[in-house]
Length: 429
Ligand SMILES: [Zn+2]
Image (cartoon, rainbow, N blue to C red; front, side, top):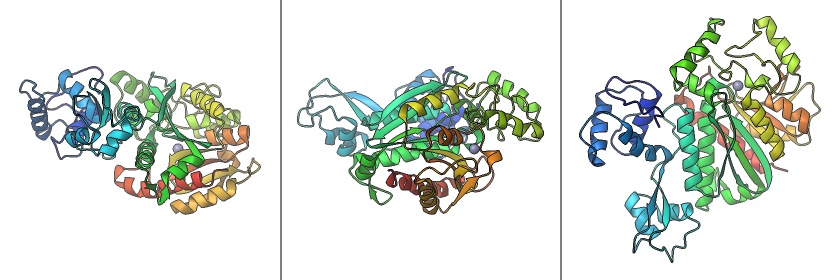
């Protein structure tokens, strides 16, 4: 969770502290929401955590603490089965239901838990962090946790970012393929939280043979195979949420110096090289470059630069390859903000069913279905998908306000976007 294994102590600040605080909170040693400030209450929580794990007394978080605390970010542990272990007893020991243990271990026969075999135990909390901004390390823990808790989820690394961070896709269900991306724009990172939470919520309902948004999760997932890319621009998100190492942060700050009108880093949308990923797809790419020149953008920038060439960014070329390989019936790009479902540009013929889907999705969220003016339909993932596949592609501008939308709006966003995605699943054809 803290790759450099720098010891964190009183006075430390930043994303590493935030992750530590989240782990301490989930482990039951703190009631405070993570704030990234290592103060007296964090010292106290670390002392308690160390004592409970038999580490020497100290208020500092060193590599031994990180190793143990990481379990609470991934949300599961592996145990060796002992004589007389049952799913019920294991669950009781760790505070989860026998059903949750069974769901995480489809390869184990509950009537024959042979001693010495390994079992995955989900821990009693959701793995998607909803009270602290997401970063690539937290997202990596969350996707590993989801794949371990729900083995029907296929976790794939479909590429790497400029800084070598993994690009993750989660797939589950069977039927028509629906591909959803989030956090293509760095300061719209709250969409990553939304998509991880969506995956966790529907997977939990499916594993428990329950309902999701008032529908049978099994029925929804027999119509549609979901592939979710929750963090399409991990470096950019790490910049905005304070999780980049200093060197990369400074390089981005130098790019941003040419655009003093934009707040830094909160106004950053691009990848870490200054390419706006939603202008970098191979559809009218030249127009995407030309349209932003009058705005003073003709090179790497916090937003609005389409890049030297279409798909020059590893994040877009990986997402384009994934899209081609999956050949989805529809795609949804989660962005913020505006309360809109954008479904067609003036330059396109409407694909069959797209308008009806857009109207229904918008209605489910309390948003408006809208077409895109042609000057805004260049180089986007949705624009490219519509042109290349001639199937329904949607850009959802979730929520209202100014980016980055704060976590205080999270409940509202969730209540809008979850029904919207379920509506898209129901209308799969
Ligand atoms: Zn956006």
